[in-house]
Structure formats: structure tokens, C-alpha cells
Image 1 (tube, rainbow, N blue to C red):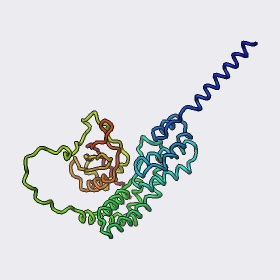
Image 2: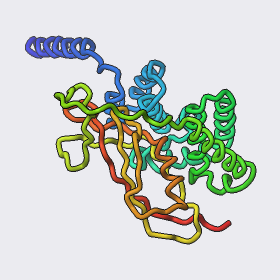
Image 3: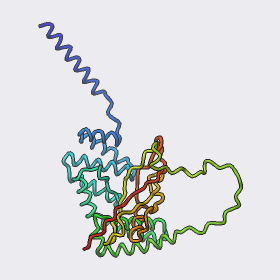
Image 4: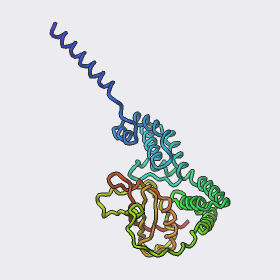
Length: 307
């Protein structure tokens, strides 16, 4: 009996030590990666609490959208679909061209994004046009050109394709296209001065253009897509099965240049090249540092269905 009592006391003492150690164990540092780990472990409440703390400090941009996306995933997982819808709507208002990757969200959430885009994009594109037109009237042509390009990309979104083909959005598209051309001409650079006579000298390494990497550089981590809204093919008869384009993604994840690598297709090239200016990526990295990267994209031509 005495031995049994000693064993029980020892067990109780061991349990107290273990409980104290667990209580004193440091909580994981709040980060998007840590929240993803909690979500993958089905600890949705803990992940949501961590994400709620992160979102208020995150600046607007891809990181903020990634946090909001996981907030929506957690809210759906805990059964709060109404709040998830509000988060999705806020993401679209923040960036009307944002579209989560197919592999990043389940079908149910993809449907929620599609429904929200159909509700919000027409109004957001009208607001975007008014803002771009105000910049144009103030002769702020770079801001105007950027705004009109975003409006045209948004009106080319497949989720509102049928609505955008009818007034008032079809009229808005025509106006935005015309003003976009005028803004682009207004900001065209003046002719470059004649170059000075070349003098032989050692190259300044600080002024050498950074190298542009490509898939052949196996030690480079390729860029990841954040936003890549591709406008639908506008024709009813296919001129070719697909188009191929090359883009250069800079160290900030923006598209520095875009060129068509396949045969010219006037009916579609201008739309795609205009939309490419709005695409965003997580930049490629070499040894953890962002680098420029050349990426080739193949687009399948799917004709716009007849109405």
C-alpha cells in the first residue's frame, strides 16, 4: 500500500513537471508560414487568430492578399461563410484583378471568388475609369495610362465577359481604350540626344545591367504567379490554336517587358500585351535574393462564344 502511494505521488509530480514545461514552451512566432502550418494541421482556430493579428500590420500588396486568402480559408473551415465572403469582397476591392491560383483554393472558394467578382467588377471598373479620366484631365498621363490599362484588363475578365459585351460596359471599354492610346502618346519619351563619341574605358560594374535568368538556370527558384488575368480571345473564328509570349519579371515581381514569340495575331496581341502590364509575381530568387527572370507563356486561343 505504501509503495502504491509513493508511485501515485511520483506520477503526479511527473505530470506537474510536464504540464509546466508545456505551459512554458514558447508559442510559434506569428507569420504567414506558421499560420499555413496550423491550417495544414487542421488547427483552424489558431491559424485564424494568428492571421487576424498579421493582417492589420501587413501593407497592401501580394503579402496582404496571401494573408487574407488564408483568413477566408480558415473562416470557411470553421463554418463562418458570411465573414469569408466579406473577406473575399475586400480582397477584390483592394485589387480587382486578383485571382487566386487554381491549386491554392478548393472548388467551393473558387466559386465564391467568381460570384464576388461578378457582383463587384462592373462597379469597380466604372470607378477605375473615373479615376483614370481625372488623372488624364490633370495631365498626369502615367497614372492615367496605368488606370485605363487596369480598366481594360478588368473588362476583359472572363467572369464578366457577357456583361462587358453590353452597354454600359461595352461603351466604357471603347472610351478607356481611346483615352489609353492618348495617354500613351502623351508620355512618349522625347528623341534621345546623339551619343557622345565612345571612349575606351574599363566597364563600371555598378552600372552593368543585371542578368536576366531563365529556366535553363537550374539554381534559380522560378517566380510564382500572384496575379495573371488573361483576357479572352475576342474573335469567333480561330486564327491559330495558341499564342506564345515571353515576359521579363523584374526583382519586384512586376512585368518589365512582354513580347510575342509566335506569329502576329492583331486581334489578340494588343489585349494580351496590355493585360501583361498588370500581372504580378513573387520574383525569382538566386540564393535567396530576387533576380530578373524570363518566362515563356503559351496561351490557348478560345473564341468568344456568340451571344
